[in-house]
Length: 199
Image (cartoon, rainbow, N blue to C red; front, side, top):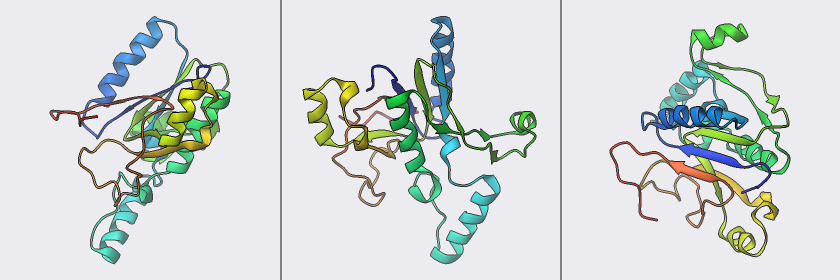
């Protein structure tokens, strides 16, 4: 993890309690006067609400099943990867907001279920705090590099984004290297009523 620009991620399925954990940690950050950039994973979905409905209908018609909210076809993994890498290097990066409801959307004069334009994170924050379905992983070879060099000198090009919230998932089917390990960021997985997988 970059010591100058750390990334802290909480991942878990919808309803697992990640938002509750996020709210508790935000309270701690405010109390400790830690300047945190909060990123929600919904901001890195590929489709807005209406477009997702159309993409699901198209997939069901053409392939007999809907596209997954978890997979690469419905998410901007490369952009999330780029954000983690850039923030770790410079303390900035590109992000946007997903406007969940009318109250959030009214401030931006947009429709609920849409995204704000992409914008750059202002420099000067203490950490990036991410909450969502997906987190960051890094290949084994970078673990060896991390053991040889200080953590903030590990080559950020090794960072990959993957699905980390479904125990027993078929990693090969989902296009995720089974040899991936969490390295570059602090990541907590939240489970609801299920034991965490053995490490």
